Image (cartoon, rainbow, N blue to C red; front, side, top):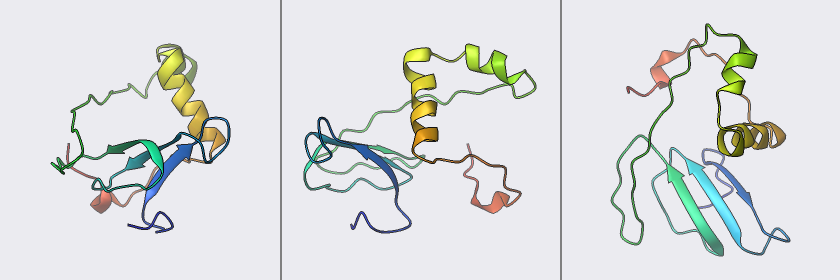
Amino acid sequence: MDLKDKNIKYYYYGLGCSKFLRKYWFWFSKPFDVKGAAMVNFFSYDKYDVEGFKRSDGLTSVIDLEQDIDVIWSKMRKKFIQKQIKRGEKNGIIVKRDPDFSQLKRI
C-alpha cells in the first residue's frame, strides 16, 4: 500500500530527524507492512487478524458535550489525551459535525 494514497489517514514522527526511529499511527485501515518504520499502530473498528501483527482491543470514551469546554478539558488525562489533542491540532487535524450519517460506523 502506498502512503501517498489520499484515502489513508495517518500521522508519523521520527526521533532526532524525520528518518530515524519513524513511528506511524493509521486510522481505519487494515494492517499492512510499512517499510522503514520502527513502530506502527493501526486503529479500526474492524477486527483484523493479520500475520505479523498483534491485535489488542481498546476503550472508547464517552464525553458529555453539555458540559462547559473547560470542564471537559480538565477531566482529560494531561499526559496522554490532552497531549494527543494538542498534537492533532498542531498537525492540522480538524473535527467537525457532518450531517451525512451514512459514513458513521455502528458502535
